[in-house]
Length: 216
Image (tube, rainbow, N blue to C red; front, top):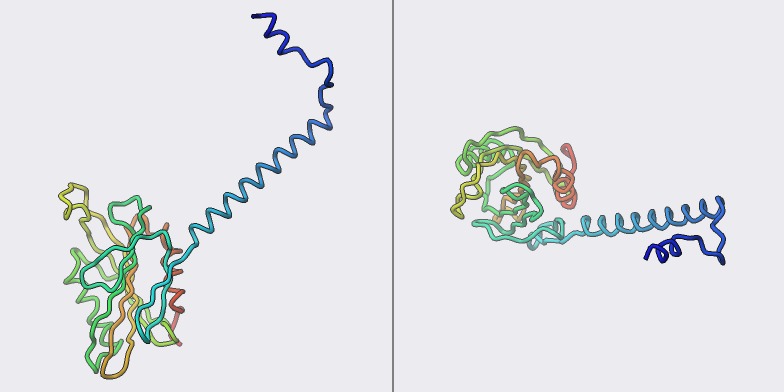
């Protein structure tokens, strides 16, 4: 057996070992193949991550885009909701859309005053952080309301997970005719500890609606 191993280890008499130049060339070829494979993998990964689905908010309303990997999920009183199944938190990052009937005299100025109060009745330990006027879809005025609250995502399923501090933003704008005015509420939310990880996705959602900083 030892003789067989020695024979296998012995350099072939028919093949000369590669020169230093040949060895360098082979190493460069292997490196290039590895770099191409990494670039291809990175491109495929970005294509999957950046893939978008479209959601029409209804006749006369804009269309928004959200990550295709997010899963649709029902929600009481919501037109649409999608969550990120890759969220590490028990509170999945999410997008939701609601349409609320608005009185004929409803204005954004009124909504700016009443909306935080309404949200405080819906969420526990609600904290209003800021309200910023922005340019919304089709150049119409809009408001971006940022706030935080405490959620208990595992309670409904009987779990004993810890409550979560949620950070969220509501985009508010009015749509429709004078006699059929609706308040459109587009909400993005995530565990406060994961907010920075989803910030780019949330910004892309608002940008797909044509939202711009500042009033036009």
